Amino acid sequence: MSDNTTSNQTPSAPERDDAGISASAARIEVLVEQYVAMFGMSRMEAYDHVTAMWFKALADTSGAVSVGATKSEPGKNGWIAGRSQLGEQQKTFTQLVKLRGRDNWHIWRLHFTSHLASFSTAQDHLEGLEHDDGFSSIMDVKTPGYNNELDIALGTLLVSTITDAALSPIFAIQRAGEQRGSVLYAVIRKHYEWCDDATIQEIQTTLATLKQGTHSITELNQTLEVWFSKAMGAGLVMNESQKVNYLFGALDSKYDPWVMTQNSIRSGVPEHIRSSYDHQMALLLGEEARRARGNQNLSARAFAIALHGSVGPSQSSSRGGHSSYRGQGRKSGAHRRSTKCHNCDQAGHWKNECPQPKRIGNGEPSSK
Image (cartoon, rainbow, N blue to C red; front, side, top):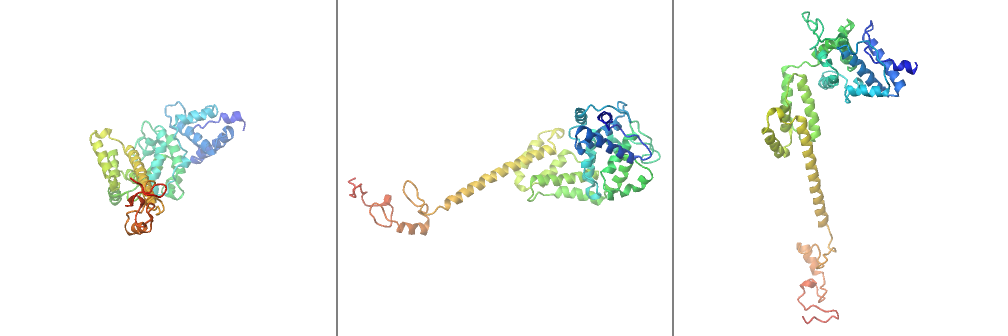
């Protein structure tokens, strides 16, 4: 295929046909290969670009980019501009955590829904806030903002982030021709997110009793984030202050003075402008680093003291020539008895303690 032909192949939304999802996936793969060949992108970059533009075309309900429309690609600069419009944090769906089952449902859901944040109305469609006729019952009527093509695109992306083993809850409706992401997600969610009272109680108890122990602040944060995600998946809504309280309650007792200071600061401001969990975590990491530096200084000082105390008897001061062990009990006394005075040549005392007149250079006692 020539460069001109390739440059006019745009990542517009795939048209529906009898193959449904398979046709969508095949269309994406063709465009990915073309972008790799044309613009020298890595396969991951090309997939990111094609998926983003394809999804944007489906999500646009205003008609500015109609489903199935084509538009020219001005080159790699056009790709960069398009990607910038969708947010620099955009990741490819192939990089997302794969849903395995209940054990990682909460993490997967957090990643998947966060990834949709850049796309207008996508999450509303996924959650069923925008839905088709008969979404959850025969009485449901299609909402004004519903886009069937977007819903089907969500289905394609949803299935691509689930392992084969975890797809079992939707096998039957897929075989029956169901492609809408809102419906597939509702079934998957009901199967893997189901929480009884005991599970909810476990989440609340764990958060209330979690303790840092010997773990670092970073490790504590990672653990709390997992349980916050589980709480969200179970329908337990927590505000920032509640999260901060769980954090403070989990800290080791050595942080008690710091926690008291932070609570005093927080109590002086209204609830809605108190610092967030992330802000408190950043402050806490700084406090941990400060303490680590202090411990290093103490350790260095202790080492210096230990090193000085290990100096042998031959090491003497410049002023009196005294051993560093002088006055240290029996060992020092024995050393004193074996030392000869350089003034009177008698053993048992030092020169500066000698009771005899100090000798001058010729050996005669000084007249002073």
